[in-house]
Structures are given as structure tokens and as C-alpha cells.
Figure 1 (cartoon, rainbow, N blue to C red):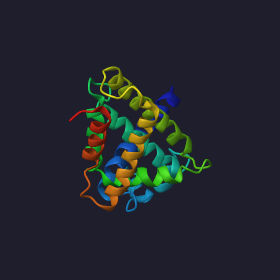
Figure 2 (figure 1 turned 60 degrees about the horizontal axis):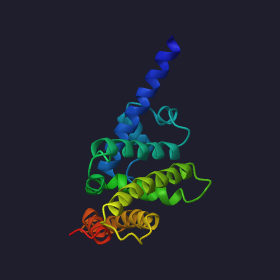
Figure 3 (figure 1 turned 90 degrees about the vertical axis):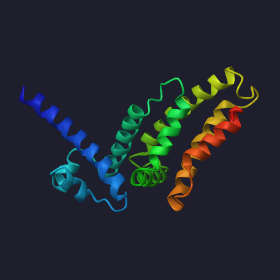
Length: 192
């Protein structure tokens, strides 16, 4: 029985670490947040914090997974207008620049198949392409997208645009990421 309680406490502490890390990185930025600072924020040593993760890379990957989980709950992508929820997530990203920096850095590093976050990003893109594919197919079935357009390619282009706009936004905060992606949606779906 003690083991079960210990496991539950470990799961709870891991969740506390991830939730706290979201706030700290969003506030301070990825580059200005150390593992020591994250550990201090939850009352652990660095070694104690890393006890809950197999590596620093896994910690940061799990922070991004937690961010996706929180965003999915906050911006319910299963609503009648999932594209509006997606625009909401993009708008929210401009409020958490440290998490955008973390995503950009880790996604680039994860291009290496040996990187611990490689599979996380591969699966994340598979999930997002499926989500976009569904939205685009619905629009195509409603007559809002040219039936000759390749939905899979359009989905990839939206993801590329969203990620590319994040990079541009990190360099120039005057860029309205959500507005640009919404404009692309209007072009593709013939909606003004």
C-alpha cells in the first residue's frame, strides 16, 4: 500500500513541476530559465527535480506536452469552429514568449533522430496534420475549398506557416501570428 501512495505522490510532484515550469518559462523565457530555478520553484534540488525525468531534454519535452494539454483544454479544439480555437492558441502564444522559444529550440534540435524529443515531435506533427486534415476536409465538403486542392499539402502548409510565423515573431513582436494564419485560412477557404 505504501508503494501506491508513493507513486501517487510522485505523479503529483511531476505534475507540479510541469505546471510550475510552464509559468516560469513563460515569464522568464527559455534561455533565462535554468533547471536550478525550476527546482527552486518546486522546492527541490536539481538532482531531485531530474529524478522525475530521465534527462533535461525529457523535462523540456514534457513541459511542451503539458503546454499542449493545457492549451487543448483551454481552447477546446473539438468545438464547432476548431479553426477559431486554433487561432486562439496562436494568439495565446504571443502571451507566453518563453514557451514559444522553448518549442522553437527543441523542435529544431529534435530534427536529429537521436534526440530524445524526436519521436514526440514526429507524433505531434502527425496529430496536428490529422486535426487540420479534418477541418480542411469539412470545409472542402461544405464547398469552401476548391475540390482540386490537395488537403494533405494544405495542412502541411498551415503547420509550416504557423511555425515559421513563430520564428518571425520571436524576431519582430509586431507580427500578428494569428492574423496571418487567419488570412491564410481565408485565402484557402474563400472566406472574407
